[in-house]
Length: 175
Image (cartoon, rainbow, N blue to C red; front, side):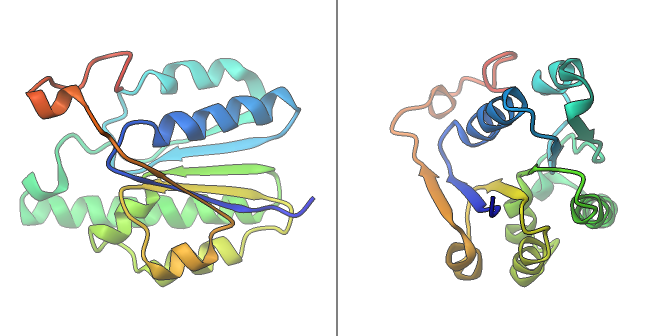
């Protein structure tokens, strides 16, 4: 099997959910999965469930981010940048070991939008994965280099979302 690059983008709900659906499908078929979240708070419900899937799923711990990047002080932004870059590098090394059939880097594309990593770094990371490894990158946007490299490119678009009516993210639904 030749591994493919999946890219899930957009401002609609469902990118992480789609990635987690693929994770469940892969685990059900006996695949080994590496899953990590970037730029998230660490409070998402899936983080409580994934360890229960056993040794087929390795949950990659990234430093949680409690506020939107734009709301952080310059010092906090530097700390988050350092932590997220280190997590991405370490996760890429784990992916390169060949121990995983599917690797999900949830919100990794947002690291590019925030200036934490260059788009070319993610393209190189994807190109450097083992030949049989599927890689999923999610985030709001994908630049032209990622778009060109993608084998699957799915865009989510919210036609309606309660957030636009002032409803905050709900536990168990949005996180």
